[in-house]
Amino acid sequence: DFLRCVTAALIYFAISITAVAKYSDGASKAAGVFGFFATIVFAIDFYLIFNDVAKFLKQGDSAEENTADKAE
Image 1 (cartoon, helix red, strand yellow):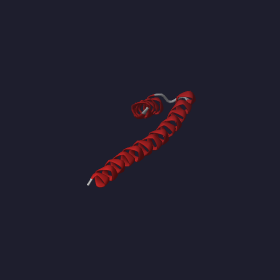
Image 2 (cartoon, helix red, strand yellow; image 1 turned 180 degrees about the horizontal axis):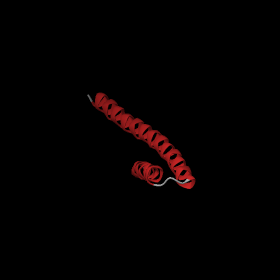
Image 3 (cartoon, one colour; image 1 turned 45 degrees about the horizontal axis):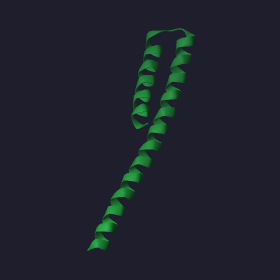
Image 4 (cartoon, helix red, strand yellow; image 1 turned 60 degrees about the vertical axis):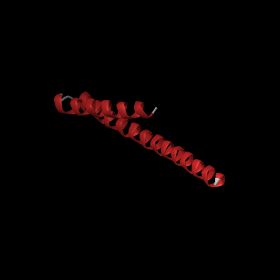
């Protein structure tokens, strides 16, 4: 899921830049705007997943420390 968000955000961003820079008609500019919006949505999803993964890993480390403290 994490890699999906990263690759999708990068692909949408690159295509949006290309659509806006290369073509000058209104449809390309609209596609660029929607692509930038999709990039923002995927970036927010990436941020939320990253926080969940960091929280999960932090809990795993604290559980191992507590077990080691109890063993001593």
